[in-house]
Image (cartoon, rainbow, N blue to C red; front, side):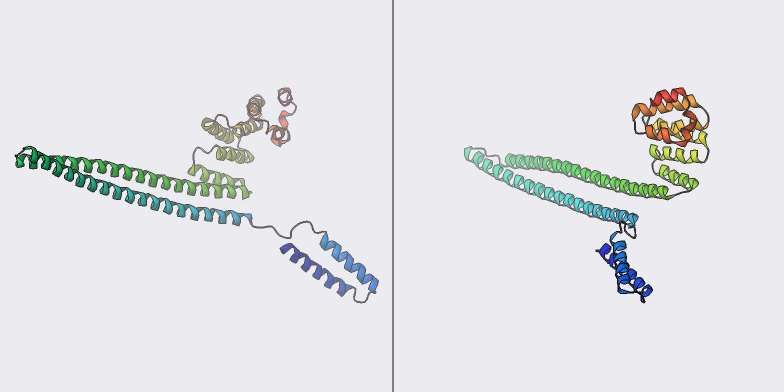
Length: 295
């Protein structure tokens, strides 16, 4: 709809300008100008503006946080309702058990009196002792059950809180990665990568991209140190080997650079085109080992 409106506005502007310029021209010339304006409008192939994608991402993240908060409240409510139901069932069961137990004692007492058991005091003492033991057993059992339910509730609450903190940290790291992608100054990029590493020290991707940035600042020794930190966390990180090869190439250590490139190509072939086209790798193009490696 917006593209049709834009085309219409462009056509109107073209028509107005053409009519003003060709006011004194003949009808044939005006028709020819009109056809040229329509042809320019119809040949538009690209939109006249770009949407703000970052705004869409932030809105989606805000919606996600709202949905997670609602889900958390719903889960807590369900757990509380289940706990209340369990307590009600436990109390009902205990009451019914005690009632039935007293009915049984009364029936047994009647039978014993009928058959000749005349010691009412003994019957009373046994009834009280057995009732106390049964009630104590039931109370202890349901106390243990309630304690287990409380422990499960606390654990689930802690899990929800941990997930919330993890989501917040992920959102913050995502915003920092977007900021780093927009930065053109390598010093600023390094600062953003340091903030990401403060949030997560074992982020090998941040370490390797930081190595790439410091290499652009002609600091190959620093880049080598960062690459070895990433490999200490993940020995199979291909990007760390690639940045390490770039740093060794800048230092003129071609043999070490080729060894690192060999490690990269053993793990993946996706870096092959980058190795060929990367300007940093130009000093290796005449090396026979390098040619044999790519062959």
